[in-house]
Amino acid sequence: MNSEFRNIPSVDQILSDVRMSDLLDTFPHSVLLKNTRKQLDIVRESIVAGGNCPPVEEIIRAIEGSVKYLTRERLFPVINASGVIVHTNLGRAPLSDDTIQAMDRISHGYSNLEYDIARSKRGSRHTHIEELVCELTGAESALVVNNNAAGVLLALTALAKRKEVIVSRGQAVEIGGSFRIPDVMRQSGAKLIEVGTTNCTYGSDYQNAINERTVALMRVHSSNFKLVGFINEVSLEELCEVGTRYDLPVFDDLGSGCFLDTEVFGLEHEPTIQESIASGAGLTFFSGDKLVGGPQAGIIAGKKLYVDKIKKHPLARAIRIDKIRLAGIAATLIHYIKGEATEKIPVWRMISTPIEDIDKRARKWADALEVKAEIIDGETMVGGGSLPGGTLPTKLLALQGKSKTDVKTVQRYSALLRDLETPIIGRINDDTLLLDPRTVLPEDDARVIAGLKVLKGK
Image (cartoon, rainbow, N blue to C red):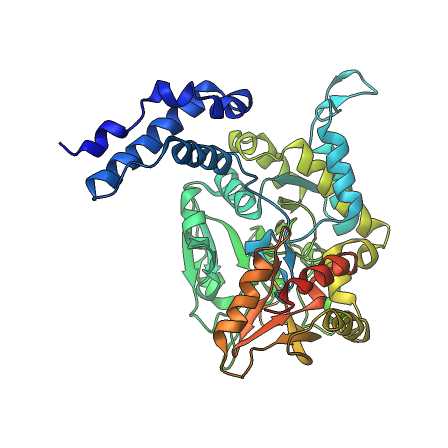
């Protein structure tokens, strides 16, 4: 038998070592016991592979590192200089100060979540949002759940189970992460009837598919892709006319959802929630955490007849929104009602920032550098499954290596910025590290400038 195995300390020997006292004061005995056994297993495997038993102090350091890594902060802030405003991987929409304060305030204690203070009896969490959504959209009623896919699933389960819903074949899309609209619809028990072709669908296609089992017509907005060339799409107004003719509701899944006219900011037109309701949609579905600019949520707005049925379905409880996000969505919607979205909501602040301001900030960033960099023209993507192909002009801080093909230096710059206490996330394109001020709020500029100084002498 390998003599090195005899040098392995026992579990009790390690746990009773004076060097473990600080850990024992911080972590439960059960956690340290489990990680000690795990570390000793690693030592045994190392000896089997021909290694030696490390000193006890080295084993204890490894145990300390293991438990501290286990209890590290998992979610932490980053600075998004990637050039994508609503970045799905980086948490989507940043929240306004008012929204953060509302969420923080409601998380500290009890609240009137489901309590009617005036009447001193049980209330409904839906009332805190419904009036705001109806005021903004013109809808008769509204409901908020935990995300948009959940809202679509709930509505179809409550209103279309074992019935048929007609949708254009060109709108049977994947919404990201391998989640597909047809799959979501099938989970509800509704039968999806696809009409038309990938590139062309007409009103007559819907009419020809309607039968006694049809309960709704559906439009799914192509919020994350764009068809070009020979195409024909049925407008929502035309689809609602078909629905009215056959006494069928139209369900309009907008995906991201938008309250403001994007064309004002030089972007392509994104269908607004108000337009959907005004066109006659029976139900309109949209997200709270993309172009709306709030915390994650799915919002359903539409006719009271349908919303009331949805509210009563058992699935509504399973996917209902919690009090903290409810407070955040309410605070975000109030920005729109006050007409202050472009001043208060970070997504719209970024979208509406003039290019001249972006240029000034990029040059301030460059002044902090002592490595090769220049300011170049670029494009910012809106992102987050909205405005496919839609970009805004920007100015980029471009960092290169010693030569145009010095990829290793550029990758090292990127790694150093990602390794900061508050990581700075850029993007590498054509062997150049690009940092976009448009996707960074001005109040974070000081942290960016301080972070860029880590590149000095690298």
